[in-house]
Amino acid sequence: MKKVFLIILILSIIVLAIGAFTFWQQNNEETPPSEIKSGIEVFLPKLDEEVSSPLEIKGTVNGLGWIGFEGQVGTVKLLDSEGKELAATYLKATTDWMQPSVRFETTLDFISLNAGEGKLVFNNENPSDLPQFNRQFILPVKIAKTVEGTIQVKLYFNNNIMDPEYACQKVFPVDRGVSETKAVARAALDELLKGPTKQEILDGFFTSISPDVKIQKLTIENTVAKVDFDSNLEKNVGGSCRVTAIRNQITQTLLQFKTIKSVIISIDGRTEDILQP
Image 1 (cartoon, rainbow, N blue to C red):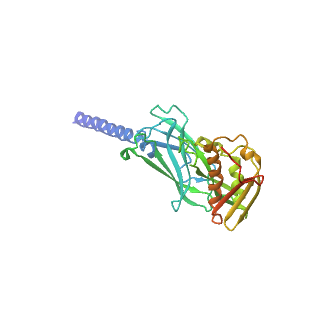
Image 2 (image 1 turned 60 degrees about the horizontal axis):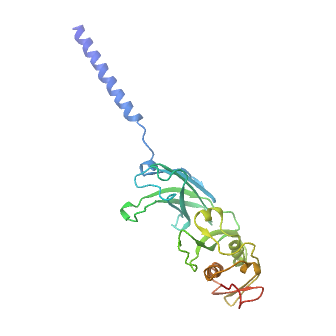
Image 3 (image 1 turned 90 degrees about the horizontal axis):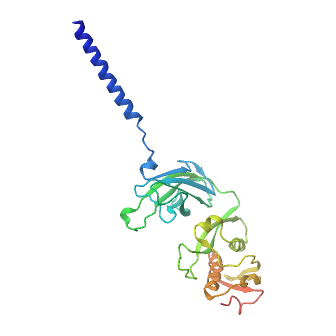
């Protein structure tokens, strides 16, 4: 009788041990976070982290539709609580983009007039353009208010990614923060003459305007903006394509303001024989 009881006890201990080991194994298997399951993991910023400009973004893609292609792994845009796009850019691969796992990073410059909820929307690189291969990942964040006294303006540049054939007349906007001022049109032009930032250059933006150009005078009368530049505006400028691009950069940057309907460009007071091809 004692032997039977002993055998039953030993078997019970074995069964309990097997059960405990199975339970432990199941609960200690490494479960990847949701970012990896979706094919993308974002290291910076973290979930619900407060973000401000410039916003550094880092992460990795791991397959499941998230791949590298020609040095990129997709795009990212920052939306505020109302769904307004504050900034957008490409995700640049920092490791070999032909590998299954690719690290990426980028920086977003933006202006936010109010603090509040927001989200980063990541879209994958889809060389096929077939909708069934589109992937998206959303990371909720909290957006900090930009420093008081700053307003957002748009500057217009050429872009060799959005316009690889360089159509001359095509210019594309970037957002830039400037100090709040009554002379906001002048402030926008001053920023335009500085050219694109390092990040904007990485995003394909470039300027057709020569360096060291100075604004000599800007007046706005009856919705007509008259802007006079120094001679550097036409220095070393050749070809009708570049001339067209220069005019469009200046004109579109000024036409964003409601008080301006048309633009007259001059150099040292001359309007007739300037910016010749």
